[in-house]
Image 1 (cartoon, rainbow, N blue to C red):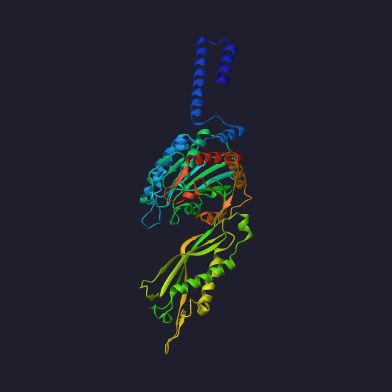
Image 2 (image 1 turned 180 degrees about the vertical axis):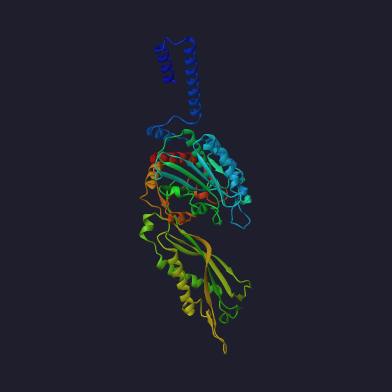
Length: 494
């Protein structure tokens, strides 16, 4: 507009001999151009904040505070849908409708979407009716290599028994700093956090070299193959995230989780011979046989998969473990020797051991037990695992092993990743210090993504003590600190 004005004055001075009508036409044209240019500039300003330099963007991100009203309002809406977000697996009593949660996320993001003049690219991807995933992008100015992604916050929850809660699990209860409701810690609190953060980025419009992606996923809590992040990865929709770190936002306690364990369930069934308990020498006690077999299998496990130096380096709370957790017996009277018993449990295997090697070891030990069943210790002089009736074939006890459907593989995060080092720096700036930890809990999907070439880093801001628990809650102050940590991490990538 200033240039147009100068041109107008120069024309008037340099062409003083023009007719009055000609001067009026020129003036009118110049004013029209000035008005049009001013109008465009005004419209652009309504859509685009003034371009920030690197230092301006860094300062803006370092000063970002979580929009508390927006965060709590969205979380309230999300928790209000929880009855329909409970998940126990496809074909079971609870099959979630994650699109009910996505609806509220989209309402918050609507003013900031590119189609509405904003800076966020939003894609709703669905592989099963009503069960969507959401991909949100904040484009940067750099190359395809300059990317930082936040994945893993999921839209489903574990079921809640309202009778066991002190508050309504299906609505948000605010009690000071505590925000109660199923999903506040795992994982709708993270969904509300990341949605609010990206909406605030869209308002700030920092000029970033790094492109940011946030992905909310379906079907994390129970089986639903191809519905959630596994479907997104298989279809190549997250390939753009591979060049940079992927921060998996579904852990707890506001510190980096650098390792998780695999979880493998097992069932060992002992088959004996029913008889009157007053004549125990004529029966094979399946409970005794099963317990002795499990004891020997456990000994083999700890021989082949002992505590190792890597576990100490990664600060695992415990080493790999194998233990029974449930016992089921054939029905009968207390005065009968039980003919069958199944002992079930799980293995927690740190990521420095191979699941295939574990299975091979345990299966070989079960085969060795069956090959010489009488080598097992017996419980007293009348306890037997082989009965040899006169004139009949021997009755031989045996054990069989079956692996459960539940199989998760642990991961060890790359401690040399720039994301890990910068994340620790950001946490230290906000919390005072970073304290990485590992645990033999398990996360679904992350090993598969790491195997596909993604640099997975783990963090979360709920409370480990309330994960999947009755009266689940998160801390509002932790979520406010989380926004500071994540915005500073973004600033460090630039």
